[in-house]
Length: 449
Image (tube, rainbow, N blue to C red):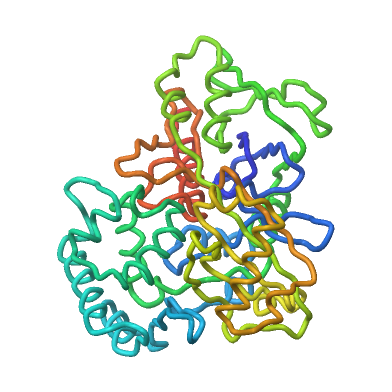
């Protein structure tokens, strides 16, 4: 079997196929596995191309981490569900109790202990949770998150401090353009789920090490091949139903590879469309049109390095962003609390970051440093030793209402697609990518010979 694309979806598909006894060859155009969730080697440090938070509900991701030998207790920092702002910054302090309470009691406990919310705000959140649970977290017709919040009569302060930041972080799409149904799906598995499912999991290692590199080692130990620096530029269906893969790069020398029993295309949606369109005698125009219809959304991560002794009181905080005042940061992470080698390194995330990225790297980093110094009342945060701004321009798709997301099937035997853009309850997350890879592998494994 061949898997084209070494992101999280491709690695998941490769591991799952190998777990079922298939001999797998994984092709990746870049020299580092991970796709849009990978490590980046810079002139300053080893960084990620973006900061991620996982949930305890990410069952397939956690299962595959265990499969390839990653111990999640050591690889991930587990925190209770929370939305905590710096004290005195005008935010709130909302954190689920550490006791293993069943839903919705853990939410009730967090509400009772929450600071910075008025009675109206707490009743608003309780009303939302109760109504959504009564509805089974399902809408008859999708709408925007903003419309949903208005329909559920949510308070302006709760929207500012809870719903808008959660929507941006989870869907990477502003509430006025984001799918309410997908947002409800995320809330179902966080606010509405059992305590362990709602836990927030922060990677301690870089994103490539966390899963893709471990998957590569596991694949090689199970007779698999991993070819990095190998760009696939053609697929051909043979008369016997098998597939040939044409790739270029040092790892392959530009030759057609030996025939494969099946292929998983785990590239970006646009690249999958290019490869599918190039298959001779195959009518895939409708699928290709769907694959090229996604609108990209950017995510920017601003890394700020301070002296080693600089440390925040918590591993991460939410921030009140105000773009009109050049306060772009939405969340800040203390990387030193995840890995001691990163002491003094803060990562500030800006989701749906198109306008922020237009500021230019130096101006954006300066504005974010000033924002941190102001909200934490720590002047030293305004003077980092160095900064690095990384913008992933096509980090996700815009998760709009009623978005038409294709399944794994292509309509051609033993050829499947995988990626976080395929049909899923979730937006473009690590879990949706992994689930898609597992689903694509299953479709090949179960396909008739």
